[in-house]
Length: 198
Image (cartoon, rainbow, N blue to C red; front, top):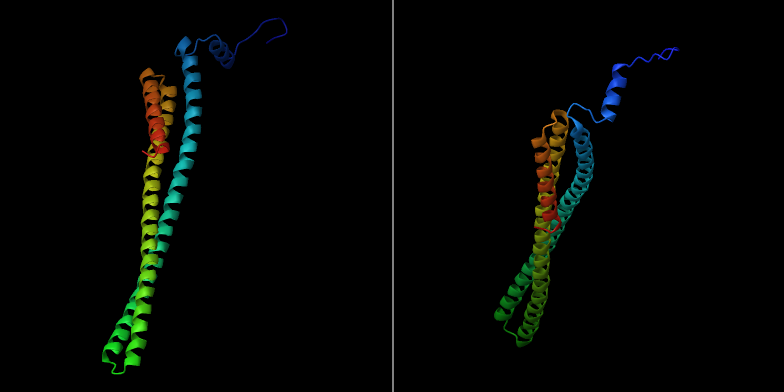
């Protein structure tokens, strides 16, 4: 601008005035489209971040639960080994009882046989309980992995949605904007399925 009231517009000034008056390259609707896509992208990115966090959490839970199952299986295996050792001792006591000629020895060995049988029953109950717990942890792990896959699918679709938004902004193609909204809806739907354990 000169001191004599003469004003010279630069290219940047012209574009700013043009944009303020709604005269962008895509016409009056272009500014609205840009604002709409920008807002939608921000919302989808936020939801995608939450879904990504949930996917990571369920994957960590699945690993933890699988580890718990392995611990319970090891404990059950130890109990079954203990059961087997009692069975061996019981068999030796039975053989000693059967080979014994003295009635006192037979009574003593029979008491051992009875004791080992009782101990085996208690050990079996504990081992069965541990195996059931291992199966339950495995089941929980499988559920968490399924849910993790749903969160991951949802996050991936939402990332595609954001990419479509960027392309729609660059090309100003209305069909890409519709595709963006469609991908967003699918991503949200899969996220709802994950939240509902479907």
